[in-house]
Length: 252
Ligand SMILES: Nc1ncnc2c1ncn2[C@@H]1O[C@H](COP(=O)(O)OP(=O)(O)O)[C@@H](O)[C@H]1O
Ligand SMILES: [Mg+2]
Image (cartoon, rainbow, N blue to C red; front, side):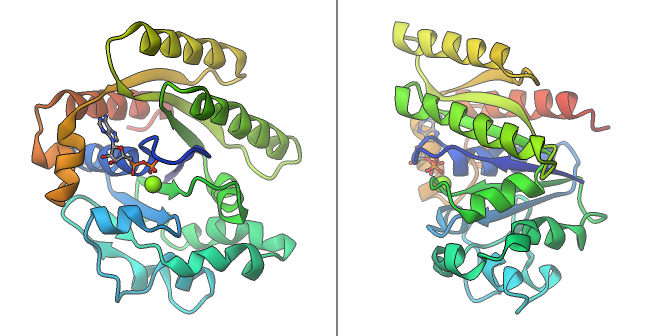
């Protein structure tokens, strides 16, 4: 099983959308996929219409539920929901070894899945660190504004630090420019991402997802874009990204 953390300290850059779409695309390609909502805001839990009465990842971290108990089968992939109780994580999981909690939990189900995809909150908190430690790869979605592009440096800085002290081997696999429009500003942002990739040891691939109203419409319909409008531009783009990801990760 490969674990992929989707992260950017900026909100609204399409982290949760990216988890949903890539998760669905990988499932449609025949892989076994588990998606975990690791954000106290629980947006993805709402998007996929998960059952909130079931144990959440918070209950698993607290050892009040097993991963098997928390896994829900959705239309698109298997899923573990978030809970607003995750907001207590910084206080509750502050022991040094707690940084390994998510990694340890994932070991229980690693034979059952090809991919685990972890959706993160915009904050740079203990949960985000847990997810870096658990991850083999990180995907960074970003919009074309400076704030979210700067998020790339923050993540790469943290990862480099953690790799040095052997906390993780996680590599950035992809930089994704989301809500792309064919304007000079967006093209410039895309070039900036290519430069950033060059500067990184692991040279992540850079791709874009075109902007489309269907992305928000699909959420109102509680369907992934792959199901809601399979032939829309952003749906195409996410399928291309999923294919590139499989190639990059060397998964059969
Ligand atoms: N390619 C896109 N085109 C148009 N809107 C998008 C696109 N990707 C995401 N959005 C919209 O942007 C908003 C934020 O997306 P979300 O995935 O929740 O971001 P995050 O998880 O980073 O906070 C949502 O309303 C979503 O529908
Ligand atoms: Mg989100």
